[in-house]
Image (cartoon, rainbow, N blue to C red):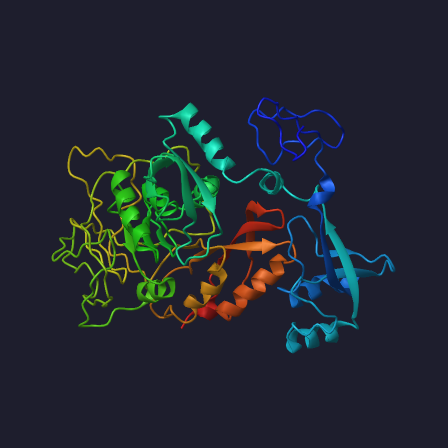
Length: 504
């Protein structure tokens, strides 16, 4: 070994040793920052935190957790509530790093007052060390491997898997834009990030650089869709490129799908065409609250509607079987500003392969008129007459329950999907007073609201936030754990029937 700590050109890099002095796999590529390293010093990864904690009676910790939401320590794999070494009757509630002083000045006075009404609290110093065992492999490797090593890894993966794999990317930073689109850097291969993925018989085309997609939610998509029945009306407020909307349409549901990202709507149209469900999917590029407001609004006379839906096309005439009733029922329409009106798609629909038919017996199918329109008539206010009577020789012989006519969304919607877990609960206020009681028929819709729950939060807290947004009490809520997104953070689906108190 040279005096400057660098290995001569002809010297092999020593193997890394673990804490038990067992030789790990020898390094095949000589990284200059690792040369001369004979043992991984685990202590170098220690991070010491000087924090504050509150002494709280153990029986009040659950309530105090709700009160202190946002001010407790939020670290993966670290519980913010721990044993009090001085008393079995108390617990330590570890405060966030942003609480720098024992006077708790960063915590609003209203929160402190509510906490003091519960019990007398003591503020105590608390030390926490995050050591080698705490950190994940990615963190450790980033600390010891030199810059640029990811390019080497990407090249090897690309070279050994081409043409099956054509592009190697690395996700950089966190998702911070309004469209939930992550930022990627291309490490090897083609710069084009357009691809196709398949889920349970459906094909989805997308551009990873423009739209959000998460393949880890495949089972959740099919779990929820399995609860829908052919002929039901689905409202998807944050539809992206259609992971719920397309399978639901394949099952014979009528789907009103909205997303704020215009690129998502463009790919939703493409996917509806690919999967041959264009006559069952109506796509909108609106703010979610505006989308709900327009969908549930009773049309005003004399206001013509310009559809923002990428799969909607206004029809001028509609011939009914057995009646001459107009396609809109009352001939009234509602105006909405539109960004684009692409062509409507009418084609055959195949069954959703591999999906189960577990339906919620508590949700009766909406009652629909028996008349069948011969051409598609779509309007943003939900007045739609759909092509369900197929010509002789049609290949579509599977979907029988999708024969819906005169869909009036201000009268009935069966399910509402809110798949924006970071903030969907806040959008529940869109349903306050938007439905008019005298027009609504049958049961109120089932809401499926996705959310994140951290280790410092409870399901009761999430329900309290949802009820505050609705200004109504939720009865018989059901939580389904979707997946763990981090050691201290899980994704849930909260399902409940929209309270009658929300009606206008």
